Amino acid sequence: MTNPPSDELAIRLMEAIRALVRRFSLAERADIACCGMTIAQAATLEALADKDGLRLGELGRRLGIAPSTLSRNLDRLEDRELVVRGPDPHDRRALRASLTDAGRSAAASVRNQEIEFTRTILEKLPGASAAETVAGIEDLLLAIRTATETCCPGAFDHLFAGSGIQVQERTES
Image 1 (cartoon, rainbow, N blue to C red):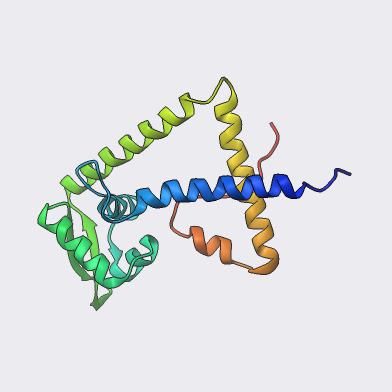
Image 2 (cartoon, rainbow, N blue to C red):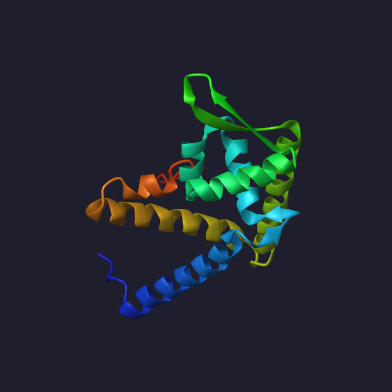
């Protein structure tokens, strides 16, 4: 049986995660511009690229923003002819947001830029460390999910619902 991790190691992990969260939280601020649009607008395009034709309530939940913020965001994207809002065919009281052809192209461009940014990060890691780092983060997420289930069943899955992140135990090959 292995010894439990030291408090020092636990603190290092906690501080490293906080630094990552701060770095990426800054990038998520709605007023930060990248790729010719705000991060919030880019996130909206990405969410619609993952599942087009979302009801506005579901889109807002996926993005974690209030209805008024979503509305302003969609107004700007509609002005650029990247998104259209229309009635839900199953519920005339609800609206859905969908990408236009130009919106699909813009979403693909944003995704390609993000992949390139991430590739640049991975290239900064020495040798086989890149794959080990990604596997380590996946292991970390699995451990967080397991620990979260002990105190807050379903909370982890709720946090990642609609994000495309799937945390599963790896099978040894």
